[in-house]
Length: 148
Image (cartoon, rainbow, N blue to C red; front, side, top):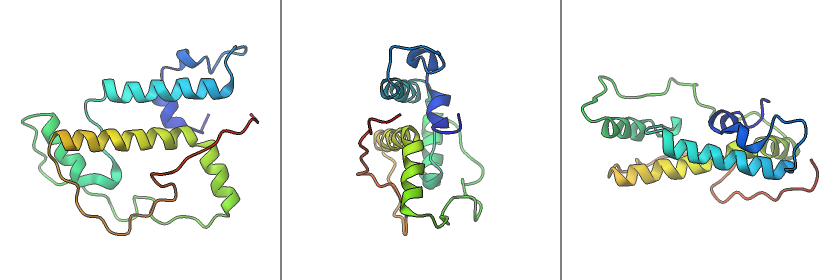
């Protein structure tokens, strides 16, 4: 239950039959239904959401979304609050983490795209960033195995 937690939290789980003991759906089918539901709910019901690594843009988008709202302080991240120091793991461990959390990775990629679309509509520019390390890049693809 700890894997793909964000996706589970945003999805309508009754659609994917993920808690039924017997289902005609394969795990891959249930996962795709759950991911699609999470994406739809994020786009439809979350008027605003921000991303930790885009604090300034998130604040501007919040103020743009809720007209008349002006934050008294700029959003900021406490030093050490973001996961910028990655634990040393073997490639096989990274692959396992990615495999176990693939739905959340795909949901995050969708959320990031949606966030950028909303910024563009609001005419909020992205600030230049340095040293943005991403273990899982934008071009990440995954091939489902027949196991599981």
